[in-house]
Length: 270
Image (cartoon, rainbow, N blue to C red; front, side):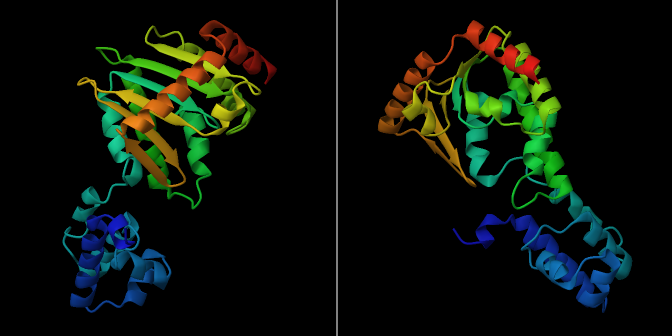
């Protein structure tokens, strides 16, 4: 897929409107850059839709071009996307799923993250998110967690590799609160949380994270995510392999009560 196809049409349209208003008003790109406190290349990228036009740029354009609110009106169409493009289809399936079973190898699953953990994790994203994108992504992740207590309840099973618990995302205090949150969520009747200790099921554990889902129509999906990519699949062979692998991982993991004690011990150690 080409680079332009990855960028929302709203970026290109709104950027072009800024350019048209600027040229119509006899304002140079240098003047707009100075007014908005951006460098010339950044302004050019926004006008061409390579970057998302910001409120700061639109407001500067309003001031210089006397656009009578027409440029600022674009802000409603330029809100950051809640989820990365590769994950949108998965999020739609997750939202309606009646059962979700996840194995997480290196990070706490998104549905179980505290706001502080999610904030610390996304703040280290490379390349960095802008502040508004960061805020939108964190809020969206926490909003997703409402599904855990929604009625009618869905069934959730999480297996977390010990390495994910040992990774100090955000530091000791953030992780300690994260552990207590896991213990609280694990008390929900429709949620099970298991820990797979290091050294158990090494081959299956190291193959990477995945999620299995079932919809109200009993359609089954598997989702595997990587660097800036994600694949949602209904392929029978893939589903069979990952279902078997999940079963093996779950058998090798600690039981729910032993897992809670394991997490509690780790919290006390911080």
